[in-house]
Image 1 (cartoon, rainbow, N blue to C red):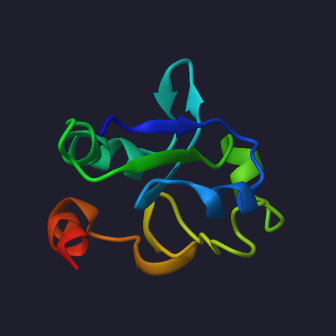
Image 2 (tube, helix red, strand yellow):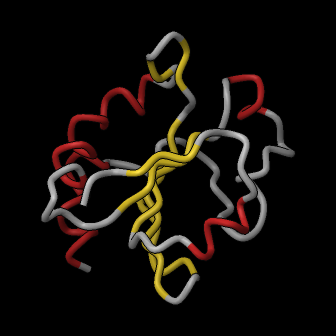
Length: 115
């Protein structure tokens, strides 16, 4: 299933009803480019994993520009997702966090998806 994208700002609670199995939290784009170097570093793995029609379903959620993300009150830092770093991949089951991957995404993503 192709990746869907949600622009910042969005209500984090709206994501609880998302049909996708995974939420991918990324920095927002500046002139078409992700401002976060860690997001850039994993983007090919994310695209290759979730982009194909037969891939797991996922939505990319942009957390905002760097000043917006760095504030402790960023809407994605609180409930229900409690994202503390980008990129972060969250597995969702029954509208709840079932798993979280926020480091070594390039090497651990395949195993994380398999469960």
